[in-house]
Length: 351
Length: 279
Image (cartoon, rainbow over all chains, first blue to last red):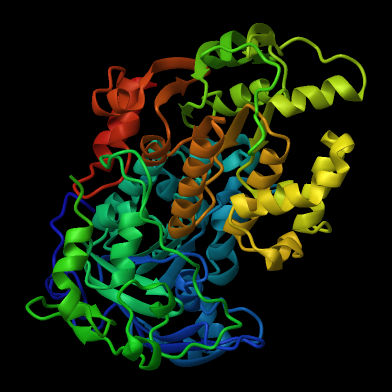
């Protein structure tokens, strides 16, 4: 991930291995999601793409809708959810798939890695069963072939075939997360959705798992959507970043540019409130208040109530996603982004 | 915490002194020869990964776990021996050190309101000051930034940050000399985490309470501690003033931990190799 230069999505899509350079692996367009009992849409028009071989980070706090966005790609939606818009994986809309297509999507095209590997694995079944189950049931693969593939995938994540006969309780958290990654690779997916896959791990183990995901991308050409609350991690591993707030994309762009020169006050405030290794000790610039709850209806910019720069316009008008002047592939949803550019960029440099 | 925390105690510059702690669970040496001291009103970080022994050390300091050998002295008094029988010695010991856990949802009674939690704590520890409890509850709520609306709420009606404020208020209610914070901000969102870290800094300035900050997050250590102890496999591998340890780490494990913090230009493969070399 860090060993390849962060290419633009266009350049990535143009690599010869990609069968159809026009179609992104994942394309979410105007996704809205309503839940019964909520006063506002949980997702209020999300646009997001991930090209083949691209690593994209989706950053946000709890309740921002980042996990729901990634889950919608497999149509793992909460009961009663009503959706609008499109979620296309390799050109096919997930939201309108029938049961059979959906099963194929989940077995072969897109796979998800969750935060807590212990919660994702049945503790009473051996690792071997867990790895081969989906292929044996959905792809009618003979058990021997499924096991053979499991051994290869375990090898790809740096585990031996001894693990096949072991139970989840016999493995450490780091090893178990590798097993979950191996399971995600079993169906040779074009897209991996990783929802906080390293949050429950130690820092040194996190490095190992992230390095592994980077290797796998190089080896298998998998596209990766990495959902995280950790800005440092997003900056370290991704080509492009989406920052989410209250169900909307606040800002998007190449990772380096976005973190060096944030153009949305929310991104800048988040960066400032993160305890930094090379920052001086002492008080942090906390963002006062908290994200709007689902019981509140929103008019205008969702961040206005907590924003130091908010004006009357911010409270009344929803800011559209506008391109950032002079920077391609950057969009920001802030009325005053242009005006605040220097202030926001200056606020994140320490020393 | 306007009342003095340290009434009737010997005046020393060290509030907490831990020396030669050992603790084994079966064949596993969870804590091996751990010693450190916390200055009055100071803040000491214990950093390490899972299995480093940092949480066991914290639990021994609090009294939730006993040490095989070694001593924990609070304001000069040994608290590592067995507790006396009955309620009073236990309560007295609880008043010296309090703990805030990572997940306040698991450490709060789901059926007790915030006001109820604080009232119960005050009644248990200070039954003789009953007339003063309402004033004290209001003071505690204000100190942690909770209003009247939150006071009547049940834990499930509060956000994660608010619940952690309740846990902090409950710990402060007994006026401890030392607060042990075990990954107390790890489960919070970045913007809320910053609010709680600032709150903890303010409380320390106002009350002169000492913090023992157990964490895996080096950014948090930099932000809120003056001294730090790095633990690995139950032993202390490096200790010193926080700025010095983070700016000029001497032990390869400390360097590995620092390198593992994700940032642009990060090299996960190099870290993985360094990690295996250390094993």
